Image (cartoon, rainbow, N blue to C red):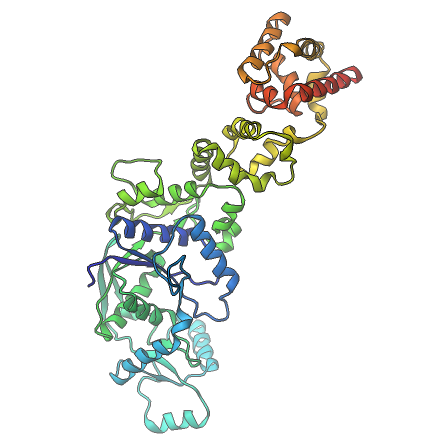
Length: 487
């Protein structure tokens, strides 16, 4: 086995980047970086009917967004494009013919109709679906007959039965699979010349000198099939490591059919999740750092990661837990970084009406209340609206009260005392008005918020007054007093 650690992520471009695939990519990336090895990205695109360039782009964009950058590709110098299986069709056939020459594979002339009929018969007899190996021992006259009919053969690999296929898994420990559970002799190259996944992946991993195959436990039976092919080729095998699947909080497998777009990384990108939060959450979902650290960067995770610490038990995708991580990063990342990432969500507002330092203050004062960055549009709306609409229930509950009218009138009377460059000083003036009127708490603050923001809850009141500035505060207080007069 090569001295350099080499791992890969090898998704099929038949769907958008799944959070489970992202976690697998992350564990491969962390392992490679921890061992100072190489992380390779390969697209297993031999499913010509379901693969698409749209899915390819989504997978590439998602991995780059998460900063899971790979180390090799067909391009010189990088950033690299992924390797693709479809660029190596002839290469797979060469290995397949080698297996046929050694008697470990054979030509199968079964038609699709015959295979469908076999599956239907087995289903009607309550039998598990499997190929019955009918073409394994064809005589020459049978072969001649099929060829005369114009049948184009597939290539099948001989699966010896009975046999126990066993290996030591770097995550799950000892695993043993009975070859009778593998569905009979398996196709390795279809009649159209396209290599089947379980064959192509072995050849690719050999070509790329992959030392460790880290993937989900739904591949365990695939691993058993692939081990047989490694043995038949007399080739060195990688170390296999199978991570437990990701379930929802009801212990159901996370899937597109049940959970819709919630399984796709792109949804979280669009919804305003921080890639740092996704990485942190996915990393600790099934892996416990040796120091039980909860918050860590990608680089810190690389330094700490070890397959021995990956749990054998299913992971649970808990959106509330992810939201907690996301809130942490929204609050802790540099304010300029948050502003840059928030700009797409603020594109409908006239940002030019505020100076850069005021824009920083706006984002700073609302981010503590955000779970996702997409919420910033609604959270900051009152800073950009020309007029404030006070909901009927707020108007009835607050602005109809005499005390509310008194607070707002006093704000206007003391407007010259506000130092709009200092949030704390602005809050101090409001407190002074409260003492003068013998009001505090919601009786003091809610009417002011309602007038300035159109709601009773929001960011720090002193910051809000400071950012809005004298003229906006005056205009909104006067409008609210007009509402009071009409109530």
